[in-house]
Length: 266
Image: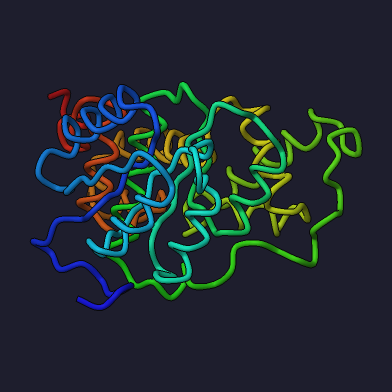
């Protein structure tokens, strides 16, 4: 299979976990195995150099990288990985809430940037998104996600009062949650650099953009499920999920039941 090609239906999605802490790698690996079962094939690396080698050797689709590693760090490793595979999903894990880290993460077109200790729900949510993207057309993901035009603008939190921007974000998501949107779309529409918006969102919503958007969509789906005249598949599309099976999987993760079971009290 060529790099960046869509994964076939029965093919496992390959993920690389890179962290210099063995216990951390084990915990993350177990978490992924318990949730995704046979859907993912996991490879592990203990430093950036090994991460690059294993990712390229096994033609992985997803890279979950710790930023602080000896030798080649996660950010440098991500840049090398991105050069060889422009369509892969890159997710960063770090114990340091540094603005410069967030900026570099955006420049390498990372799917997300999670702070340690990351909540299990946040990790699963972003991995679900990464697996979903790996099975779709990569046209959108090949577009650079970092806006050079907005770099340097409005990057200091004091420029905008937190409560005003927070409300603007909520209003934007309430209006556009049913569309195929991502963090970069929201940042562009609200005229902020991707890096600033990413950091602001995590600080003020206390969760990742993907997690917040997923929760909002599921709450909207619950409201629509009260109307039995609307087909479950149509409800998924109405709240932003083009793939009905993906909608069912996300809904069950948040509620413990499928949309149909929720509708009929199962």
